[in-house]
Image (cartoon, rainbow, N blue to C red):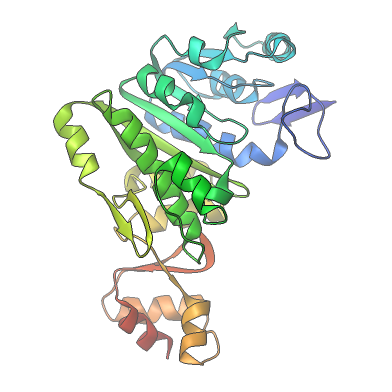
Length: 327
């Protein structure tokens, strides 16, 4: 069966149920993930690109075709996947370097952009991925084990991510911030500072893009921005987005999510309010979000929606001011 995504058409089997044992792995639900990685690379840099756990190779092939000045390396340890990558590259007339290695072995060389998109936790690949990312390069990390990070399995989160999650309206943001800190701690061992430049919570996964910078002082600056958010943490308390980059991505990829992220990236606020929860506390009917935002902005506050939740309100106003505006 043929599947077209972006400027690439691949031969694949579209699964009824996505599992890691489905042969050559391809997940159509992850298109948003791949769209954003292409858009981000179009706005940032070319260079030597690594699609480390490539499966069908669609991400790497799209980057090779849709991003200028790139040298794309596509890897998968599965022999069938490796052969399919080569076949799909030929069919799309794309020049890439395909390899059939275990991911951590493949990452023994340096790259300007490293993409880790595993089925489950990225933990087994973090050391090698961090070491492989060049100075001023970008590391992209996906985690599909969102249940531990979001508070469903707190003990698993403590073991894997060295932090306590919380299961409430903020669970996806706290989950992303816990994952961010874990990557930063791994990088700190190698005197590398990993600063988020873009992040999103979509469907069943978290995705974070980091800018890598060498230097002990830069690492110390990152580590100082770790702390608690309510009962959750320790986690990253710094910015999740580069506002300029978020705006550029929203222009190229005009979706509800990218536009919402572009708005919330302008606001340096950690965490958000759930208007549904606040309305229950106030014992009032839930006002329309636009009306709450308008009222807060009139009072001189910055306020926006958040892509983490349909009821989510990100603002520099305190809870008392938000409740007053809702009344």
